[in-house]
Length: 368
Image (cartoon, rainbow, N blue to C red):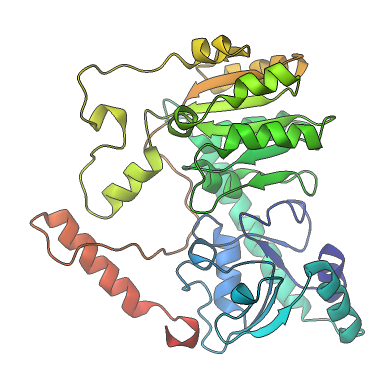
């Protein structure tokens, strides 16, 4: 894909599943696309008249509920081994292996290249996006820090071949936007609209496949509590992981979704849930009970030294940090989430009105 894009002068944007196809600093990289993506890639999608979709299901998060492809004349070329996913939005369908098909497409195009201005537009968009991202991460007013700020610190000091694993909650979006790929094929996000509990088990498998690289598992406290026993497995089998356990006091991204649709905070953050005794889990002790080494880090300044200790350790090592439950990186795409038509709550009625206004303004391929 990279060679094809370089030869033709075509920007490449990535889905969550496709992240690390290109390096973050590659001149043809146009950013991550969709609801969990970037302003840069979403702006490209709005202007595109031909979209070559390689191995993607073009699902709701990728397409911004099919709103990011706003050009009324946009056409899709869909390359997929699954016929069901290839046959979408009146696409020109190619059912086949992505690598083989791209090679055949490259051969068929001969020496055709595309407007250099279009690639320059992508590069300028990425420049602005990186500036926006850096400004957000440089904030000093957050206590505790945001997911994104923790991600940046690790990203800046890790080895280029570090293999990243995540799957659920706010981390897929934050990593998709904030993690700058240093080496290709080093990112695994088994997302599927959040696959809670994949992180540690998936990381264990990733370490088997990449024994000479650091495997960094990113997991939130909610997902960790749902499935964590493979911490023991990784120690028992000698497949060392670095676990970044980020604690926002519950299921923070679902709380955000609830509130954004006009609801009140209820049953997502632990403090807002029905309970008899409110307390926070001592994750360090829990991890240690399964044989891992663990420490709690309280500030971003403490994180680099802690991460280096994790790198030097000879067994699974976890870093536990509190993160902000309300601060998120924004990427400039709309997402259609249902809101009740009738409610006694003014906030819900307002959210419903905003949804209806937004739907009227969205151009969707095929008029749907």
